Length: 383
Image (cartoon, rainbow, N blue to C red; front, side, top):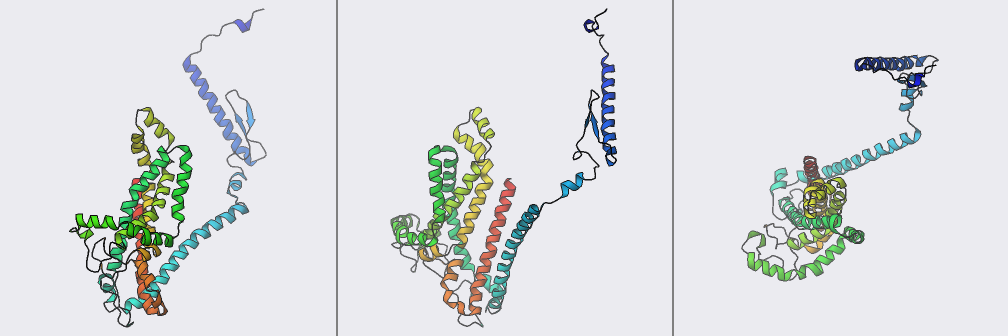
């Protein structure tokens, strides 16, 4: 008897093999299609593989089943509750913001109508506020806006480089045992109350900077930013806008540093390891991978800090000497939107007088929206 197992097979033509494979695939696809179309009846859909073995297809994966799509569209009670709470939370914060804006507008309009210089005067009048005669008041925001923006920008100029250095150190250079303690220390600065910063700036920082102010004024006193006037605050007390900017810088420093650090540590490890494998130094790794990846987060943190600086009240109320004038000098006193409203609190028993300061608060309210819009635009552009 011949041994068929040992008989060598004749080689098949590759074109015949390809044709046979195509026929098998077509048969398999036809079998799956037939199985799926027969699901509406009592037959169970089947799948046929290349060896012509048939296996049942689960009903949840079969197209055209009566309960497949319906099962995927069912919402459980927990999902419905969570969706409702999420939607309600988003709607609630929108309602709160709209209600605050509406309140400010309704309270500010009567005062603006009684402004002796009209609505245009509100944006151009830079003299002292006079709200004694509620039928013809004199008030405007140019000096308040200039002082607020000046001290806030000075705070950003001081805080941003320091915060960037802290974030880079904690995310790339600091030993593991030092990262958490220093991170907690930076975060603790954000928890210090404003009045504590105000006391520190008034009693400690201002007098401490007196000699520095003397030196700076002697070296650059002819420059408009460092000029002094007859009614400027004394260097011995240091109650000027420069001190206010330094205090604000310390207050917004942890916000910027913490935000930037959280973004820097998310830099993909593959990018860092690739740069190191190519022979990059640690600084080159930071410059080429970490900073480009985390730049948007750094800018977002800076804008958050700017929002905090624009609305700061108590610290500046204690640190900076109030002034009705703005002469572009950092060695001069100044009044911001927030400190002007705080100083005028005794006048709030009259709704029309209060409306004048509420109008200033309305401008500050819109200013924060502008800052946030700029931040979002910059982040979107960088992304």
